[in-house]
Every structure is written in structure tokens, then in C-alpha cells.
Length: 293
Image (cartoon, rainbow, N blue to C red; front, side):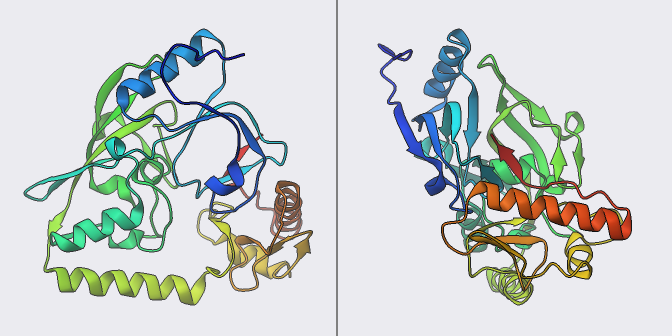
């Protein structure tokens, strides 16, 4: 069924989502599209709604585990130039949600803007990082937000200011929207100082995290007052392997793809970690990654 026929949008069938995620795992999308601009995105939303097609948005795929069976419905990736624009007015930065973390941080360093260095080494796009309030133990991107422009499930756009958005630990109230553009308030600082801070954050990540194999970063949220990685490590699970996936020997909250890992392998390891931590510490770990079935 070519439900998009006559709309002039380019939709592909059976695109392998393993190539669209940092885990390098997962089956195919039934339908896949990279809209060229917001008007085309709105058209896709309305077409999917009319024909009752499931609608999913993917950025860099850095926080997603896709089922081995793939995904029914339409997967949309906001990777066109229209979703990656960056502009600056004083210390106020406006950027499209499709900007990668690296692109954003390089722009900030060139223009002497500080406040986002803690994102160094965190893969993803600006939209994805904001939706999950990405950050470190002491910093998060939501703290720099002034407003964001979003599109709802009917294709309508609106601007949400910080007072209308709830941010929590690795969460926000933006799940019901597609983030289009973000406005951030940053701080002026000499570029040399910014680059030094970026290097410090990257060095820290390289020293403590497993960056040598494909992964989705931390798979579980840290429980209050503790670290998921510490709890999993204390259960003796570092290096535990199922199929092509393994709990990292360097960071126990990372599950890595050693080659040809399947979604089912990762889910089995997640289930093992949850059961053992619950048994030993009576703590229920909560997934940080999103699981697409």
C-alpha cells in the first residue's frame, strides 16, 4: 500500500535500522523517510494519522534498542539541513533539533560560548539530548533552555518556554512532541578555556566508559543515591556475555555489541542485571534506553 502516493515525499521500504543506531542492532523499518523541512514533516504526520500508520522519530539513535524483528510503521529521521541550522544572538543560541552533539559543541567553541561542555562524548542530537535531559551527575541540558519550538501529533507547531516543561533525571515532559528548534542561554568564555574543558570531559569518559564497541551508553538510570554500574558490578556481572552482547568489563552499566549482537541478547543481559540487583540490593533498576518493538 503506497499510502503516500501523490504526496511527493520520498519514502523507502525496509530500511535497516541497525545502521541508524549507535548499538548497530535491530531489524528493518517498514517505512522510512528523511523529510527535507518542517512542511514535509507536517505532511508525513497527517498522512500517517489518516492511514493509521505508527509514527516514530529517530535522531542519532544513541539511546535506542531496536527489535530484531524491526519496526512496523513509519520511522522519520530529522537529518536534513533544515533541521541542523544554528544561529547566534549575543549569548543566546538557537539550533535545530537535528544538530549532532559534536556539531553543537564545535560551534560553541568557535563562538566562545560555554555551558554545554559536559555533553562532550555523549552521542546524539540536540533534540534527543533535550528530550531525555542529557547530562552528567551535576549538569543537564535543561538548565540552559530558554524555550523550544515543537510539533504535536496533529502537525501543529508551538513554542514552549521552560516554565511549561518539566525536567527530571534523564527525563522531560517533551515525549508527546517532536522537537524542532531549541533556544539556549550560554555564557561567554574564551575558546581556549572551552576547548580545555571539552578535553577534560572527553578524557574522563575515555577513562571510565567503554567507547571501543557499539553501545547505547548507560542502559539503566542511576537509582537515587547510587550508581547502576556499581550495583551491577557488585553482582559480579562485568564481562557476562549472551550471544554477541556483553556487559562491559570497563563500565557495568554499558552493554556492548561485540559483533553481530541481537536485540534479544541485550534484553537477556538487561533482565539478568535487573534480577540480580533486585535480589542482592532490593533495588529495581529502570531502563534509560528506549526499546522499540
